[in-house]
Image 1 (cartoon, rainbow, N blue to C red):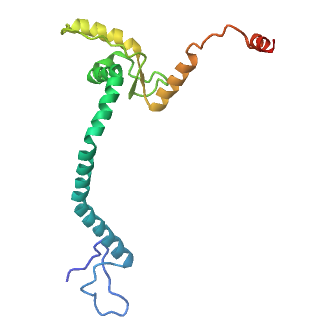
Image 2: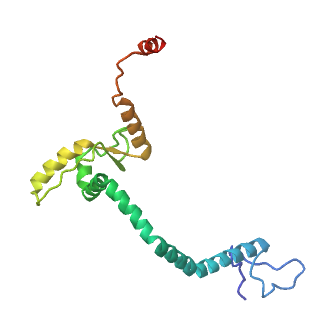
Image 3: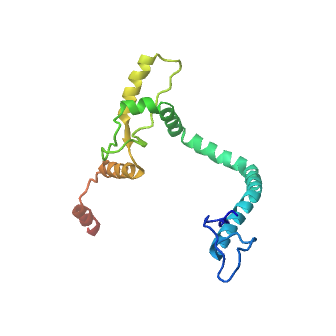
Length: 184
């Protein structure tokens, strides 16, 4: 006769102490295996059953909020056209740009580039198709305004330093002169 095995852990089932044979209805070695197996089966059974319900709920939500979402995206696009066009351009020509700028992080210099920092969002529009040679020259010139970073943290650190180094407004009076003018 074939030996019977636990459905969860696949151990060979042994007869209980004092029993003459293995109970033919027994499928698990102990209660722990039985509860874990049944809870997993229960989870997958209901997961599959509720899948359609979740899909239907999402469709209902999406149909109800579609116009609002589109308005939000469009308003953001119209407010920031330059940024959108710039990002679209970089996304389209990403491989060529990564060949031109350094393949390593601008800040730490160790890891590969995952993010690109735009120093400016000025990008010229071409009314006609330009030749590949002209485009390559433009791309090289354009890449001078891009910096590559390996992580979000390096990118933020660079931006903080950049803000700290940006020129601050010059005051015409020193602090002591200003205090003297107030006291007079």
